[in-house]
Image (cartoon, rainbow, N blue to C red; front, side, top):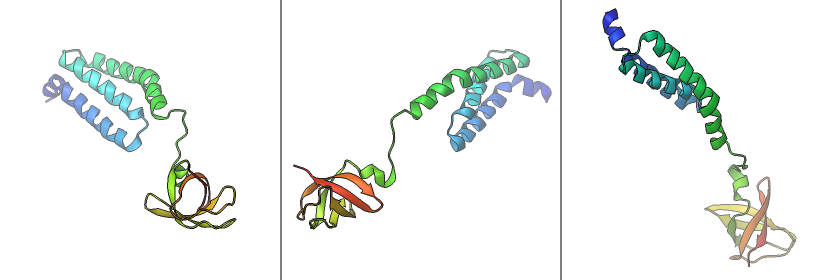
Length: 149
């Protein structure tokens, strides 16, 4: 039995690699991915007939090198310096259409992507329904708009 396991270590490395990849799917921070890469490199060394001790050394070395060099590069690429807006803040800068007249120094409604927002103009002027507007600010559920020429 031991002879079989020692002669088919590549299967163990493949299993370790697959388990690490599955675990990486739950974390998403590229930490466990480095161990999957180390296991894949050890799998190749196992297929080349390298002794078990050296396979373990290769696994450790490849994993550490991956953690030191590959992971930071991947994290920089994924988490770039540009700010990502989400949820309601993502509508700022978008173009909508007045769906209900905006009264002078008052409120109206603006339609955008199937949603209807309570809106006021930035300068307090009135805008008739159908006017194209750009969303310039958002305060809670009220947006501030400017007409688009």
